[in-house]
Image (tube, rainbow, N blue to C red; front, side):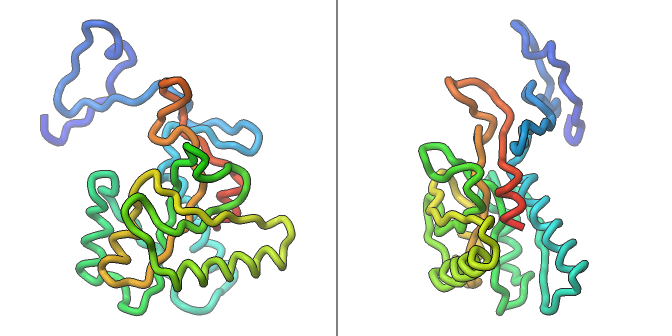
Length: 208
């Protein structure tokens, strides 16, 4: 069954159900629904990070911004930052690159507040990122806030997990991280129930 992916029917979740190697089962939650300014979706982590990177590239091109901007998409983050580690180890980015890892991060336990703006992520569960990059990102956020009173941001450790910024930083790149607060991290909802992940649109807009 190697390489075969079959969408498992909802009935497979019933008592006595069986599945074969290669079958794919998905949680029975909203594929994507907008409730006010909040997006509820089966997967926000890290689809929203990809959306933010693509939107940033799109706006930079539209504005004919100067400089060099690279959007790097990697895989296998959940099983050990494998894609980012290879990219950093093989020096796929310029040596003088300023790396900003973009993603969502669990807001559980009061780590951050949804709707309060994007987050300058100081570190993760295992590592603190480049202080110089974090200081620069904070200065940029402060400048944006002074120009636009509606722009808000947060500065947090976000130690609910590990992020690809750790890989880039440990391989010697000047690295910071920016994210948005993620609700129902990995589809873990209140009271032990499966739930759609959720993010606030204002946070995503601010991240871009």
